[in-house]
Length: 117
Image (cartoon, rainbow, N blue to C red; front, side):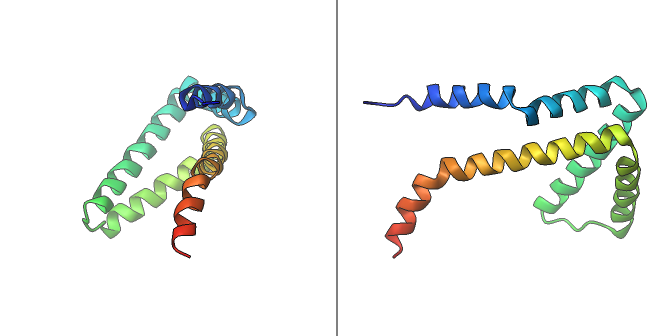
């Protein structure tokens, strides 16, 4: 019996959308977007985060001023209840996706792991 992996993947997508973790993330995201001040602060945080990651990936040095500015922004974000809640929900969702990825990759790890022995 052949398994259609795409059907299984779409079932997994549906399960993720119905999960408590996703629903909490969605609700937290909507709360942040409903508050203009929170939305602006969160978008600023994401922009700075992306800029620093891009610099890092390109091998560019991040200045002390950029680090201090980012740290200040992180402090503001962490003090904002709805953004903090969103970031916690993002972290839980990321952990879930990481665990699912480990399960999905297990057959390949076993295959290639056994070749090294």
